[in-house]
Image (cartoon, rainbow, N blue to C red):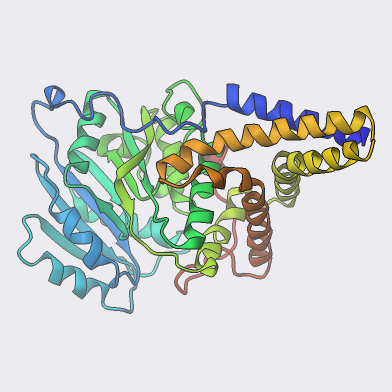
Length: 404
């Protein structure tokens, strides 16, 4: 019991550190850069923007999302390039039909098969960038993302007013089905824990990331960084792009925030679909390293499973007369459990979910541990990164874009 008490105390201290000194990762107040919602800071000339939408077999979701993108209330020049990434469901035709009568121009182009060494989505983004031609900003977005009417204007206003080369917003993911309400808030929470938004938004900090559903990029900053070629093989393209732009030679100021006006409308009604979403890239995030996998799984057990286990075991032992060690184990376990519970509440509020879900975060973390282990299993079975029938050959992310 004494060993359990010591381990639980160490976990409780770790939670104190995470809450106090890890970039305020648990807060959700990072939204858009200063000036984004201030009409008095409108640009003298609204810059031109082209939205690039990589789309692979997205005919079902486009009628829900594409009209809103084409109808953006943006005062400047704006058009959309949809890149059909070898779809087999009529994605290109659906997009063309939806653009009929729209106020903005839509160009539909085919990506073709990616060359060796290129990830499919990054290759589609590169084809869209080429088709966009001369413009001031490129909005890389996904086919399942829905935009509030003023979302683009706020993004651009924030980028110009705050001199940011990249402004990205974490789309509010759908959380309607039972499993979505379990998995999605924790996904956002763990992402923010890996990449504290405040550190991403601080120019001197090394932490860099972006959220792939909504990335407004200043075109000259991307050109200075070498375009998309330096991250051509990245499976986690958004984080790789954030790192590419924040570091030399571009060294652009970047911003990552939460959003309620940018939403992912793709449904994940079953656990299996959510499982695939996580397992597709979890081992990639660990750079395909068995050592990092073992450390991650051990860390999840220590930080999330140990505190409630120590609390229950300590209370049971104390009730049976287990002595001071049992009391210490129970107290330390309860302190750590309380810390993680409090840290999860802001994300639950963002998703308008009840506070009673916060204490079960340890169980959700264990589910994520199993999904991460399964991601490694898929990698070694030759199915790593499988998505819509395409499996990329196993490889390491380019080291230049993958350092923490």
